[in-house]
Length: 397
Image 1 (tube, helix red, strand yellow):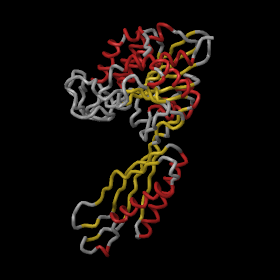
Image 2 (cartoon, one colour):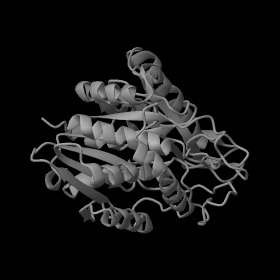
Image 3 (cartoon, one colour):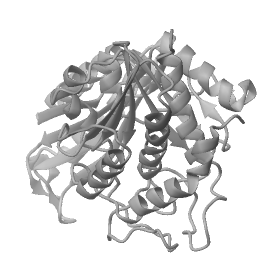
Image 4 (cartoon, helix red, strand yellow):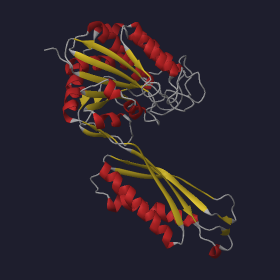
């Protein structure tokens, strides 16, 4: 593994930063302390910053040479509303909040790259260090863009990275094209007519209608969607009624839809609406149908993926870079950035969880798990990747 020596020497400091962020998690758009820490470090290292994009976002700007070319490197900062079960020294000090997805580590890795790039500047152009809020549920990437990220910081490409539990430390994964799915939510209210449970003929049972709708929706995946196009439709909640002897007036269906293309999302939404409306009509019921598109599919660009793969291979070797990594149906708001700029999003192996100190929870070290902890061994690996990627993209003539 070819890591950058000054970054290795800086690892202890990066670990302190990472664990400090982990101990003080902040939810989406609440990342005031984290943003202050990031801004203070960048300023200490002589890096000009922009504040306020995406409310709590921070952008560091490192220039070298005379080229007008620029590249963006993005890390997310927000935590999750999870009660941490770990009890080690850097566990969360805020009840109900936890860095259960490794954004503390993502922030620290990019700070490690910032520290090195500011001192060596072995590139020609501009590196924008994007510390983004609200990835988990707040679409912070889009909000930063709406606040002028790409106009105030014109860049030719943008790159992102996420730790991946289960993949060995020292490995990377990437694939061209769809890498992560879109995230969409639906809410359907079935409106029937309440009645005594002993006299169902006098009412219109919304529960039976809701069940028919939920069953019918599954034919969209099995009979309307091309089997070669990924798509998941999950009804995750059904709520209705409050008494055993009463047929209620309404039933609620809630869930998610995930796809890798807008066309498949369009198909699923259209068919869901048709099935819900016509099924309800067949039972003399009515429906209110809501479908909200949250994050689009994350689609890597071919040239930037080739570049990212080449950089990763130069660091850990070809055998430890999976260039045909299996896409995941999880979602990521970096997708918004890739809709406007070419770029690539990669996974960096976080290991199996053996890195956790004594006092960790009993569960596995998976993302969004109360026993999760970012693996500090990744800090010099990820920081080296960011540096080499920026240098490769902004090569001196």
